[in-house]
Length: 500
Image (cartoon, rainbow, N blue to C red):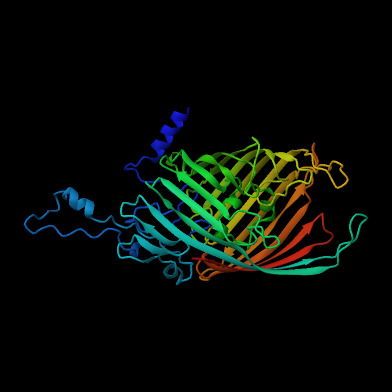
């Protein structure tokens, strides 16, 4: 069996004359936009990309003119060496929408650094460097989100177990995210890599000046020689629900929905087989994965309780960059994605999975069945994103004890449902977008009980796109309700995002 696996990896990695399929985790982006992780520089250097790709220089030097003594007529094929030296024609750039601001296309144009075009700057993607053969490439990119938050919390009455709390308003100004990306391909265009490092104190879990989480968010390889059997292995976002898969730099609101934050799987170590375009039809995708099941917030010895995932997507109108919220392409052609997924987690050390999950006080484990369905739609500057979540699980108690030496009573799993819907519209000829969101979660006790509170969020957002998602200012307001808190909370967030 080991020999068979080794032969399979050699076959996937071996160079060949094929053209690479699109990066496994970044669908084609006709608008030239980039997102949470910049696309690997997998295309040959002679191919131009981005909004102004038609104006990009060719990567190879123009062929020398044929000697006068040996003219080539239009009816005679060019010699092999001359044909090889001629640069491939650049693909035509997509026509900008008539509803977009006039300056947008020029602002998003890529900027060559070297005359041969193999080193260039692409807005949102950063600096790209490629070898002459295209077998090796590297893209360097960084982004930051500077976020100000004001949260008004109503006063809470006291109980026998805890004193009450006075009404107050909290304010914070922080780097919500500050990340660096490295991506590209090695040895062949079909072996891609991506590394994401974070420097944000929030994501590093700083407490008393000491980080409690690794700076490594993503570190994985994609072997995409076979379109319908692309292999992804390493640590990366589990492809469970669509909003979590969206690029963090391409969100419509300042952050993802309350339901996503509760029910998502976040990142994990593992592998999956996937196809972003089953059978080349341009309308179907699948993901089948196995992961460690511990998320990225826990390190050290684990057990054999793993996570198992399956996801399927239908795109009835064809492929598009579905990992961007907001319809910045403003195309009159409708675009839609319908997805569904199921995941089973065996003995998760958290009360729910991933970054947001806490370690239960009793020290036990949680096994859960999880399911989700989502829908995204785009047309003419209008966008709609929605999802439904379901989770049902049970606890395996631990052996932790309290200060009196008594076993800690296990807390029930966070069983229940979640949902959200948000919509936005870009005002024609302007960089302004208005959006609304409604969502929440409901605890369902069922057979195993639940510790999930009932929660609701409702609010709106105003976005100003100076250079699409690459440089934008966002202001949103949410009214938050929770069965764990008496009275509603009001949250206002202002965020400046820059990707470079």
